Image (cartoon, rainbow, N blue to C red; front, side, top):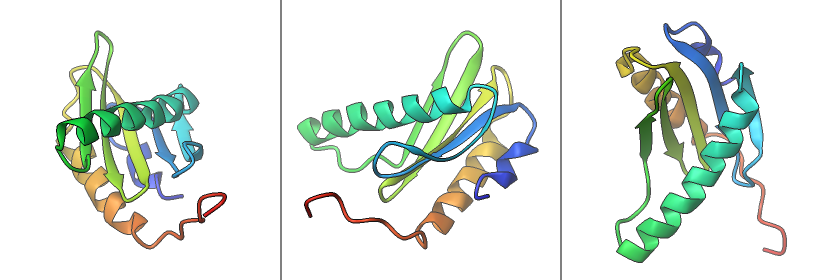
Length: 115
């Protein structure tokens, strides 16, 4: 229940916590499973670009579309994010995500297969 704090925030329609394997550990709201899958894909693409550019690790992703705004943060191998109605104030959600990211440091990480 790591994402419980996001469920009551104004404008949040979906939230997801994605593990190191790209699978959702927790998801809430309409479209949350899709959000989880896309967060995993976005992280993979941006990490590849950052490696090629020598930009370092990603700590935050955000984008706005015609209908929603997505904000996400990373914590080690985890990514957690929220989809919000477009035009919503994202500050409280971003602060909550940052606080939750700190809590994720305590989650155990399974070793990669073959490691």
